[in-house]
Length: 115
Image (cartoon, rainbow, N blue to C red; front, side, top):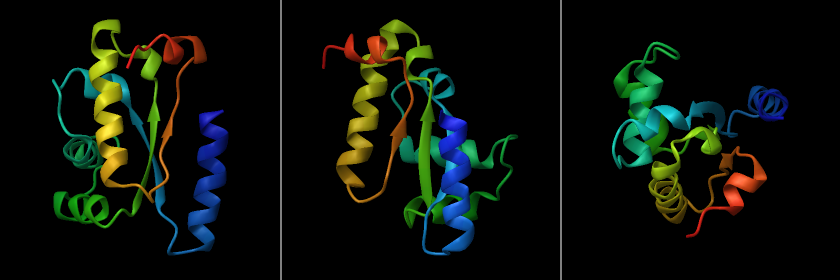
């Protein structure tokens, strides 16, 4: 479902330059980076081998909310790290209220979080 959504969102961004660019971020790689702010992690992921953006461009996109984060696999984060991951997502959303945000997870695993 996430990939279908990604296709639709990419189509929107291709037709409207003001629309944020959807980017898939695997939450399992955040979980290995103890309690980092999502904004920092987004920049590192955008600069990494998957996307290969220059750091200054990645920082600008994140700062200007040009990236629509599609956070993949909350249910794949180690059980003990899920609450911290969910809190980091909540903290990001609290400071970026108007930016759309997508989190994928099995419903039962999400509902099992006791936040």
